[in-house]
Length: 132
Image (cartoon, rainbow, N blue to C red; front, top):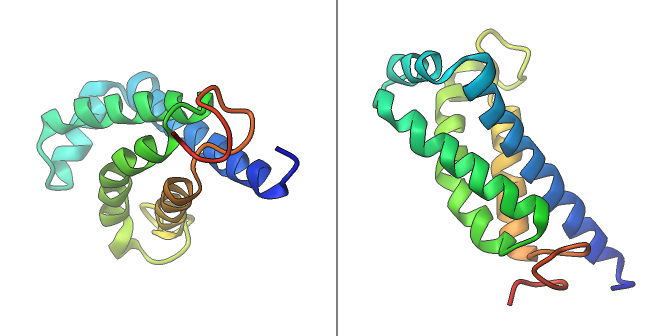
C-alpha cells in the first residue's frame, strides 16, 4: 500500500462517492423528491425515474466511500452521470452558464470511468488496489 497510485485511486473514489451522496441529498432534502421528479419530467425523463436515480446515487456513493466493489459501483453510476451530462449538454461548457454547463457532469463521468479502471485504492473496506 505504499504505492502513491493507491492513494490517488482512493482520492478519486472518495470524491466521487461524496459527490454522488451530495447530489442525492439535494434531490431529497433541498429540491424534494416531488420537485426533482418535476424537473426530470421537464427534461424529458419519466418523473418516476427520480427514485431509481436517487437510489443509485445513495447506494453507489456509500459503496465508493466505504471502498466496497468500487469498480462495480462506478459502472452502475455511469448511466445516472451520463443522464446528468445529457441534461447539461446544451448549456455551454462552464457550470456557471445559465442552467449549468456540462464541464462538471463530464468530469464526474471521467472520474467514474477512472474509478472503474483503478478499483478501490487505499483505505477501502473491500481490500487493496483492485476489487477482488
